[in-house]
Image (cartoon, rainbow, N blue to C red; front, side, top):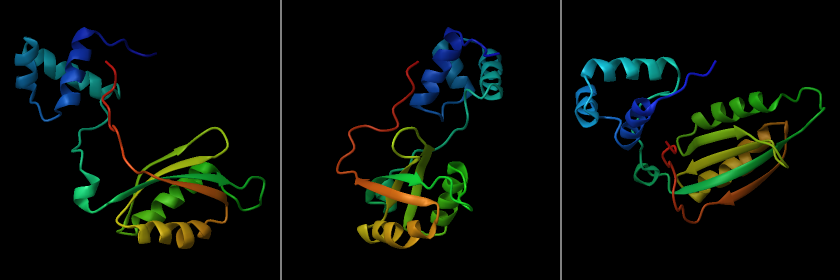
Length: 162
């Protein structure tokens, strides 16, 4: 059964989305609620899985990842030895984690013409080329792929609409 979030829960979540470094005391002060109330609500939101984690959002370009590409992959079906899409996604993640010039920021199983969508950050076009020509073909259950290089990102990591 899904628990309903009330206005206090949503207010806490809004504050945390804008700055997850806020202390319980700061949240309590802003919302004019007792610190113990905020602490118990945060604990509840974590246990419910509404708050999955707290993290710093890093600028990929400042870390040297200058290009972003979306790679759409179709997996082979009905071929003996071909794994499912989740297994393929995990193998791709594992392979890329061993290469310092590649950062798989997101990989999803999708509907439609393709099976997987990969958001890949690379340090240079050479790393993307290496991934497409040398790494991806090693996965025998990849039937085809299509790559889109991002020219400009308008907005990303948008806060959830609360």
